[in-house]
Image (cartoon, rainbow over all chains, first blue to last red; front, side):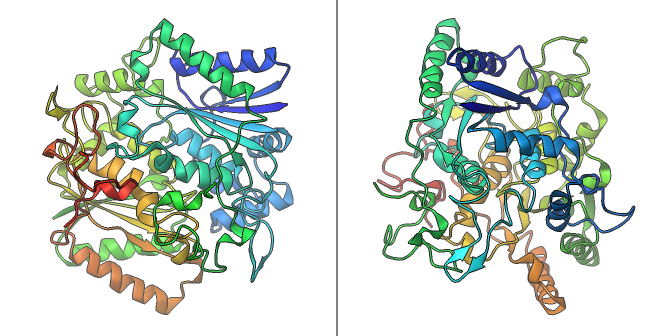
Amino acid sequence: MKILLVYAHPEPRSLNGALRDFAIAHLQAAGHEVQLSDLYAMGWKATLDAADAPHLAPGERFDAVVDSQRAYAQGTQPADIATEQAKLLRADVLILQFPLWWFSLPAILKGWVERVYACGFAYGVGEHSDNHWGDRYGEGTLAGKRAMLVVTCGGWESHYSDRGINGGLDDILFPIQHGILFYPGFSVLPPLPVYRTSRIDAAGFERLCQAYGARLDGLATDAPLPFRRQNGGDYEIPALTLRPELAPGRTGLGVHLREE
Amino acid sequence: MKILLVYAHPEPRSLNGALRDFAIAHLQAAGHEVQLSDLYAMGWKATLDAADAPHLAPGERFDAVVDSQRAYAQGTQPADIATEQAKLLRADVLILQFPLWWFSLPAILKGWVERVYACGFAYGVGEHSDNHWGDRYGEGTLAGKRAMLVVTCGGWESHYSDRGINGGLDDILFPIQHGILFYPGFSVLPPLPVYRTSRIDAAGFERLCQAYGARLDGLATDAPLPFRRQNGGDYEIPALTLRPELAPGRTGLGVHLREE
């Protein structure tokens, strides 16, 4: 398979750097092709702005949606954006590896999403009708591909448990796994979280690599999270609320997973 | 009062730009002092990296936690970071205004959090003991201040409802309202969401300003979201899980709100 690893950590001599190197070596040893986007090493431009719309005249009004769509359609996007889109189209599997900073993606990785996910590429795709609200949440440009998060956390596992103070990890990651990965079509594998990163010794790192290796070996076969497809009949259109007979009376982010 | 408005939108001639101008004028007319951090206009550096730790020798290993703590304690932080910290300390109320991009903060605003929230300032504060796990989630450097999100969304309100496909807005915003604002001590007021931004005409903008004005008039008096304080007895320490007798049997992010 072809694996795209998008990696966001500022220090290569870190746990994250070691995990990155482990993953690349493990995947290559299994015969896979690995492409690495090391955002800090690339000096990735984090901020989406008018410079990403070179078709605009100086001082012309910038619209993030309209202008990303136009630059994408015209082929006038900055080269760094077009290159990352081509990597996504080529890949069978996307891995996002990052430290959980303030319960979300590091800014540099969030900015990778904002700039690479052009309108017409990752959103604004497909027709809108009475039973179809665009190709998204299970359909879209990246449908048929798989994605997985590898997330390092300073805190304890219990702090991210169902009733842990930080919020359950599944809920904290919902805007990423559902909103960024499932939205443009990825099937999303369960994440690989790493907790208490400052306390991982050599033996702990060895155990972690065994667990990560098993997950890498299962990239093609592990069952994805059962997010409900938007246009599969589970949601009213255009309200896009879950039909009342599904997960009746329940609320919370878990309702968007099929009960299996 | 002293209001700090941190604003993240790339185009001043936009709905967000108009809302920013409305808020400043409304607050000033009411006698408040307004400080604006217009991140795009400031060319805010979004990416936290070794350049933010000028005490490091060239090529020395960078640790985001250790080095932000050291730079903060030594007073050797970059001037842009120290300036924003001083604005936060001076303010009575913080407003974060931004478009919801991919269900979270724009990268430039996420990077403001990552760089300004130094260890020793916004986290890593207070003692750890058997009944106290640092000054956070209701205690901390910014305790006694209030904060509010003003969030523009392209989608419909129903898409962000309790059973809407994007996830309920309260849940989507939990990592920001609870994880970024409540964590270092802010009391968090309910957000002001704006939906279907591309469809707002002159009359709609007028209604929006009336609603926003009412919220600005209530900054000092509106009831904050009743997030549970970490060290107030509701959580087991050090597991930091909600005590079983509170919201018994329930999970989901809503359990972290007191039942009133």
